[in-house]
Length: 82
Image 1 (cartoon, rainbow, N blue to C red):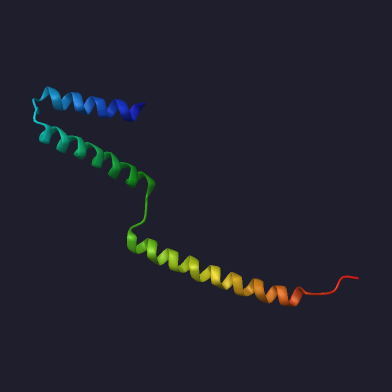
Image 2 (cartoon, one colour; image 1 turned 45 degrees about the vertical axis):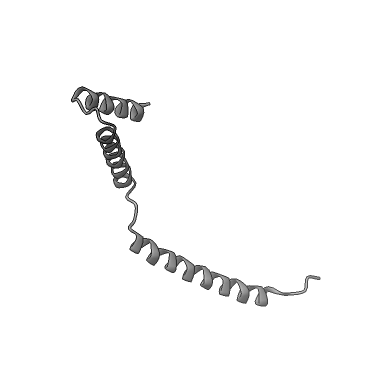
């Protein structure tokens, strides 16, 4: 509700200032949405594309190591139960 009120207030302010053409209105609306998006991204502390690639490679490498250890563990743990 707070976000929708923010957008409505911004649109009302734009209309009050006399931006009547649809191009100006759409540009202003896109700018408002971009600023809100940037604000949310900043609050979430998201990583950049390069950092994401490095982290995903590290996770993939660790998953492969875990699979190798699990396979070794299965071979060792195969004991007949009596």
